[in-house]
Image (tube, rainbow, N blue to C red; front, side, top):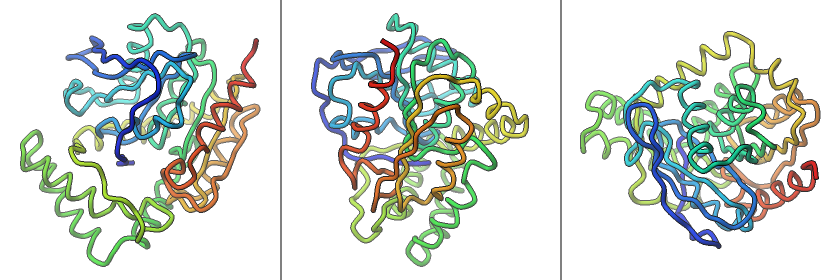
Length: 296
């Protein structure tokens, strides 16, 4: 889901990186301060906003990058689940990381699960934060209904108009402006208290083509029914954090946890789709729990 917040500085030594992938490069930031942690932001087709997680990631060697679809990373497709998985593996390979704990938020959580299914030896553990689900429609119908109920009158219809404008002129300043305004209109509904939601950060970009085509690929992947069966073989530690007042129904987190042999679910009270914003420390705690469960 389109999401972002104001970035912070991660404690540790940060360095920028570029990774060669199909069609171009992925750009990102690495913080060398502990064990490897691959961070997958939501979207898809959204600017990397994982800097907002900085205060939650202290003590980890965090690898954060803008996923395919939005500059400064490669803007060309294919926008498929398998390509996004390949891109994530390329980031690990570039840094010589044989296996990492993987933290994914929203769509990034679903991508993390697909990564664990495709390359289980590269994933030491999963931390899934208010994730798109692994079963059924992933919670999308409930999510859409909640956004409708929480949005200001006229906001969603105007956002739909802006989305159509953005889709009609991809890659143009007009498209960027329309997408940014659409996000601004729907942004408050992601929080437990829409009236108290902060403003989205300046410079946030959203690519409608990447979003649409990636979700078409997600739909095709769900139709195969393979992912839950693959995750049933995942013996890695799994922690799921859900916002009590997220647009995603809590049943999404519980149904996703049920496909794993031993996933644990924590519900962040009075928190929305960004639970660490309204309940600081909830992601840090999940990372600590998963670290304690790692072998050795």
